[in-house]
Length: 65
Image 1 (cartoon, rainbow, N blue to C red):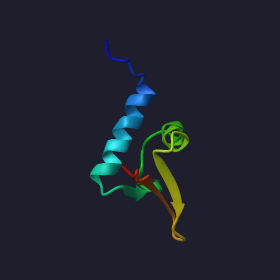
Image 2: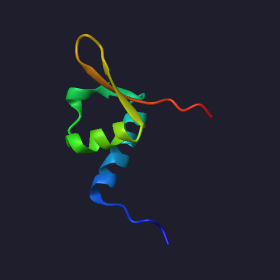
Image 3: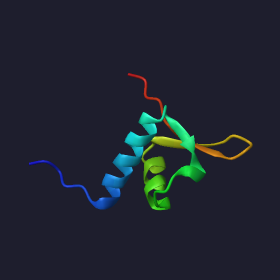
Image 4: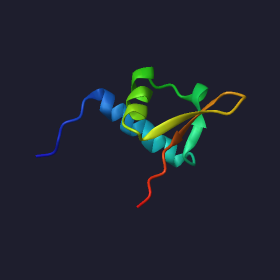
């Protein structure tokens, strides 16, 4: 039986998918997801926040396979 996901996990998965579709990174100010969803992805090591000097960028963490 598949594991059930709560709304927060589904939103995090959708945000991660959206990031990947947009080339792996987007300006943090353009994301309309709750802060807790972004923080959960950062805590899980799936994304990182970078200071570009002109704002912040949310990027997918590259995994070596």
